[in-house]
Amino acid sequence: MGKNAVGVELANGWYRGNLPGGVNRRNVYGDRLALLLQLEVMYKDGRKEIVGTDQGWRAARARS
Image 1 (cartoon, rainbow, N blue to C red):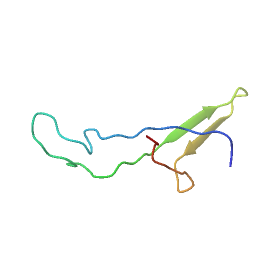
Image 2: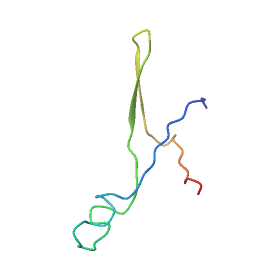
Image 3: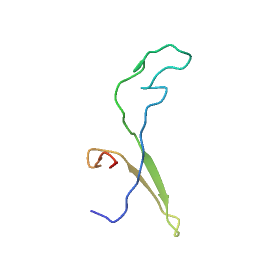
Image 4: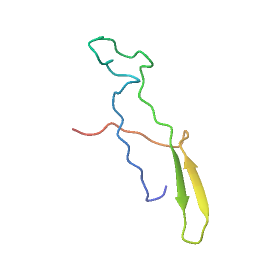
């Protein structure tokens, strides 16, 4: 495993959170938090590497 890491914070929003305007409905579009990421790395020598999320990525809950 390499020494690099990407940090992402997921939270409720229009997809999974409460709808605005006093509607009082949750999870209208979905009920799971998820991340689909594509990272494009450009090296000084002009090479480009694309790294995407797959089963090899790990996740953990943030500590309070």
